[in-house]
Image 1 (tube, helix red, strand yellow):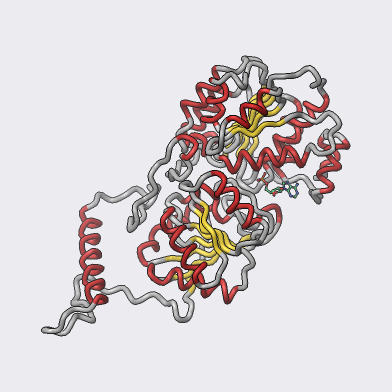
Image 2 (tube, protein in one colour):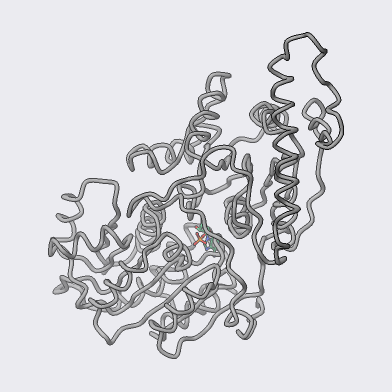
Length: 471
Ligand code: AMP
């Protein structure tokens, strides 16, 4: 559907034309008129669906129709889970509103950077605030921002907001809002907590769910390569050479690994950088900027940092480590193949990952053939209850390899035993990944980005929703 019929002004349409947005995406076509009408909205929106424009365009439209000359306190508040998303939504407001005569003033508010500039911009008067919850509360407490005049509240990526532990902050913020207002909640998944929040927040909302497209399989070629844990960096290097990807976003399970692999790649002449929650906001923004500007070829990232980020024309994503949660798989691979482009998503599957990847396939309704790459074929798994094939020769000191093999066999035996003793899991339970490196520890407020999310069962609401088919 074209944007012309959605009730947006010429000046907004001009910016969309400049961005070459030919057609509205399905969620935009469905939700823009509803958000424009001022009704509450509950929308199931996947990352990459074009959801940002879905709420930003109507907010801009309504504010540009109003007289803002005397306005001081913000009229619209967008709450987002991460700094990167705050910066990205802020940039979208700027881009979509560039030709407006009556341009709303926007402030981005997020932690990890100095507070005084944000206090200063907010204190000059603001129409739209895009914020992460913790820092917003800081600014409210410093009386730099008042929420008493908010007319539209958007919760973007509500499932992430709650998974990152922002429930308390959100409740605090909700209490500061005027009762009369429009609310819009966007979420990719609908676990119980999201539904509870939606129930508390929304008044007779219009519910929008597009045809469930867990993973946009048609645009993203998914590949799975069987490989040994220790050969993954070498395999990554090999693929970078062979596949000639311009840019690759590589997901790993820990900050340490993001750093280590980035260093190894750089040492072998491949420009690589890292993005994770241990870095200052400045370093994170710089890493992202360099990657977006094609100045580095590989971005080694943990889930958090990469969450919600939008990189145009990203041809490839690699799961060096699989995500713990099956929904994160869709989020990760959705970094490529955005807005109609095509992309490839490669997952490295070690023998320990196999069961978990099967679960990912099942939940995402895909089957991905396991590939073997010459020179990187995994070693056959040794049977733990049979004699280990290459036992050290009696009387000879065991080599480092022998020791590793013996340790692996002992570990497999122990795991096999634990597996037998464990009560049978229900199918719906997410498999746990083997923990070789420490799993990522929850970080503090605005750094709560690496907390991994567990899968939530499909919500009764989602099932009950009337399916809205694509035009
Ligand atoms: P989002 O899901 O909001 O993060 O958007 C994903 C990407 O799609 C962003 O790069 C947007 O600029 C782009 N996008 C959003 N709407 C459209 C559209 N109607 N046509 C083309 N690209 C779009």
